[in-house]
Length: 313
Image 1 (tube, rainbow, N blue to C red):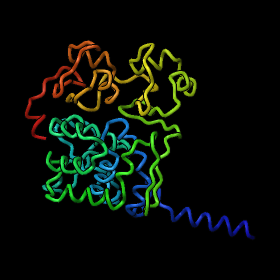
Image 2 (cartoon, rainbow, N blue to C red):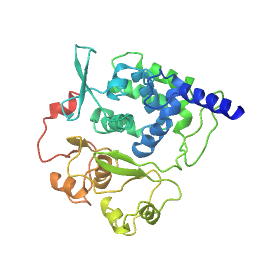
Image 3 (cartoon, helix red, strand yellow):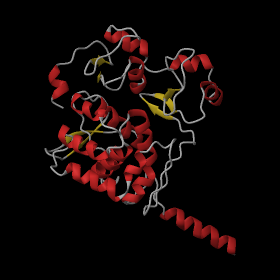
Image 4 (cartoon, rainbow, N blue to C red):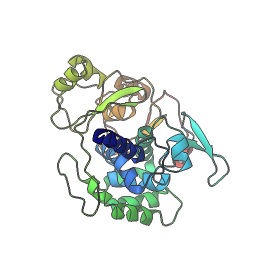
């Protein structure tokens, strides 16, 4: 009887615990618990503070409870824009039935948010701000026009400080900080997760990884793994690196990429999941060519885009 009572209690508890995809309304703490790891992974890949990613998602999606979050997996309120070629969701906003991006998963929404910031010149200056300076990032997002709300920066800062999200901005593989007054644990990156972007499977490398270890783990020839990621013998693995487990595609989801400071052609090919050779061919470049900040690279062919398309978004 005790065992039966234990099972009934356990089932009741599990039914009350919110989880990704639940129809129950999520609290702020629920949301943080569910998506903090996604925010940290985006920080490792794209150098956007995890606190900023989470705070924006929490504010824009009402902690995952908004109509847009539930029906379109859109947690950042990103509208279709002229270059969007994916699915869409119509919703009243500043105008009636505006077009918003619709994603297959919440992870795709997080990834597209990073690409959205990285591929627009007006946000370029943000990437010169340290990931630990969340206040400067909040003020910068408002200055760049991410939202029309005059109190947007303050709202983000209030969320970050209330839930101590800035603690997530400390690199998870270097330091595991304390969270006084908040029941939240630092994300553990020791569980191998496989993601998909632009129809290509990839992982995020972690401490203790090697190319040989990954090739063995996924039963991929070492030479193939290196080829999929446009790597050469002698290249060293880096923690937080995006590593594809199958060939990248010949076209990206986005039509173009605006080069950020320090980016290389290979790095851009990894961000968008497009073959380096195709990226070079589209732009009449060689892999070793150096890029200039603000330079436009075409990801889906050699079609020109009017400058207006880059500045009016």
